[in-house]
Image (tube, rainbow, N blue to C red; front, side, top):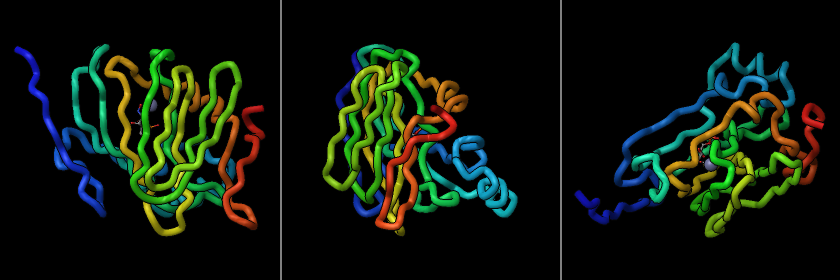
Length: 190
Ligand code: PAN
Ligand code: ZN
């Protein structure tokens, strides 16, 4: 049986898709070892396992030829000086790409390749970001009060490799500086 075309909407301001098959919540405990200020991380976690980000997925078969779509919502906040962020990952099939479209909020996409190239792109409403094959990616919310909301689409066969980032972190971090967000080298991944 052939699949039928379908539509859905992303109603503002919440931007939760009108068709949702899966809702993922990731809390502070899921980001163990990722924030630079580990003392502050432990203290925050002892008080409350805060909700850091959510993903609303539109399910499709996880095979080549399909596109997996959804909405990612990173909430505002910091651990020490480091802004709330996603775990981040490489695609298991490294030669797969991804498109992000920013709908709300301000932030960055932190990216790197296994060979050590790095790139950090600003995300703001209306901006489309193309993440080429091989680039690991993590979104970071730098808004003080607003969520960072992005729509994404990536190949059905991409898969997710979280382990590499869990072990080494990203080479670049986004920290609060005196004049706003600053991109700095991660002392633990050099
Ligand atoms: C996105 C991400 C989403 C959550 O769908 O999965 O923003 O980030 P983590 O997967 O790093 O927790 C994507 O890039 N998919 O490939
Ligand atoms: Zn991805």
